[in-house]
Structures are given as structure tokens and as C-alpha cells.
Length: 370
Image 1 (tube, helix red, strand yellow):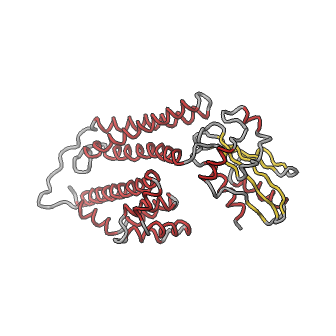
Image 2: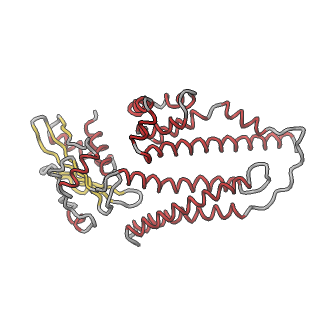
């Protein structure tokens, strides 16, 4: 092989090795992060001891610069760091970025290059390239079917072709199918790894990554759903929740209806979301109303009604899958300035996985921040 082609092949093999190492590290970090959610807070806190408090401080201050240093520190095992990051509530994208930066060191790249360098004493002319193994084609096909099933569940539900239970069943089938394809991609990647002179290695790696991503989305949804209480109507004032007026007809015709669930729902909400309380703003009601309306639009909610006389704003928001949540904001004057109450309720889901509480938290944070 000419020297230029030999060094090109060396660079490609080293880049593939570095890519595989980074992928494995990222997959392990993501698994540990979400494992903390799965095993529960008490068990994870007992395991982590003081490290949780340190990472919780990082999560609150959103300090990206410290996380790569912890990734490189020999005093903090990566497995413990992954668990602690998940428990501390550090933003997932922020943490994964720190994982990639912290582990993408020059030393690891040099190690991959040295590993890829051929041994001159044993270098021989490579055999001719063989055909694409069947297992690669099967893995790619199975992953594609799983992803298509997940997409079909979403578009079919949003288009009204089938009800929610059918869509969720199809989504779960797609997730399991995609996971099976990812598992088939592992022996496919081994059979076509660099050095075997077989085609299909990149396709096998893509099947693994795409299959894990498709299955991971379903796993994340399942974890958040099971960790949240089985309620779908959240309000800052459970004793007197803001009423839907403009959206009343839409909610009456929806599976969850328009009426609030009563004391049982209020008790579950207070136990799960004790921080969901009314906001007191020092500005007068007209100023607060204008700001509240602007924030609703900035959050890309579809504003249905904005009644300045009644001090009521009604809006809807729809998730990627097609779940519609209705939101009503109530503005009332108080001696301190203005009290803002908000209610967010799902139309069709038995449990919202914490989505409505997230709507309220985000909205009130924007409203009360300077």
C-alpha cells in the first residue's frame, strides 16, 4: 500500500476507535444519569453521601466549567458522578456535553492512534473485501421498523387515525423493536469492525445509536411517568383552581373533562409538588397582566383568550407526541400588588409525568425573575 493511503487508513481507523470510545463513555454516562431516577432518591443519596451536595450546587449555579474537571479527577469515579448528576437534577444536555469534553482528551486520541498503528513485522496484504453480512442488514431493517412504528404512533394520534391507547401501544412496540435492532447491531459491528475487511461497520454503528436513542426516549417517558403522581390537573390554588371559560367546551368534549379532581387530587399534588404555590408580584394588576400575556406568548403557548377585565389568560400547548395541555392564568389584586394563580391540565392523559407542574414552574419563574 502506498504510504499516503496507509496513513489515511491509519487516521480513519484511529478516528473510528476514538468515536467508539466516546460513544461508549456517553452511553454509560446517560445510563448512570437515568439510573439515579430509576432506583429512587433515598437509595442514591445513601450511595453518594457528600458528593450529591457538591453536584447539587453545580446544578443550581449551572457551572459547566467544573464538570469536565470532575470527569478527569481520579478522586471521583465516573459511575458515581453519573448517578450524582442525575440525582442533583443537572441539566442532561449540559452534563452530557461535559462528559464528552472531559473525556475527549489528547491522551485518549493518541492512544487510539497508537493502537491503530500497524506492526511492521506482521503487516501483510489485506484480503479482498467481502460482501455485506446478513446480520447488518437485519439490524438496520429492525431499527428502521422500530423508528417508523414510533413515528407512526405519533402522526397517527395527532392526525386522529387512532385513539391514545392504540398510539401508546404502537409506540411501545416500536421502542422494543428498536432496542432489538440495537442489540443485533452489536454482533453486526463486531463482524464488520476495522480489520475484518467487511462492509457495513458504519451501518451497524448507526443502527446501535439510533436504536438506543429510540428505545431511550420510551424509557425516559416511562421513568418520568412512574415517578410522577397519577394526576393530570395541577393548580397553584387547589382549593379554588382557576376556571376554564374560553376552553370550557374543548375540555368538556375531552376525556379528562373540565372539572377539577377535588381533595384527593389536591392532596397528591401537595405531596408531589409542594413548591407549586401562587406568585405575589409587586407590580399592579394591569402591568402584571401585560407581562403575563407576553410570557405566555414567549413560551410559544397558543393564547386562546386574554380578558383584562376578568384578569384571565387561557392558552394551550401541545407536546411532540400530540398531548394537549390547557392552561389558565388568573390575575387578582392584593395589598402587596398582584397575585398570580395558574392551572395546567391535560386533556387526554391519565397521568402527565410531571409536565403540567413543569409548565407552571417555568412560567412562574419567568414571571417573577427580573
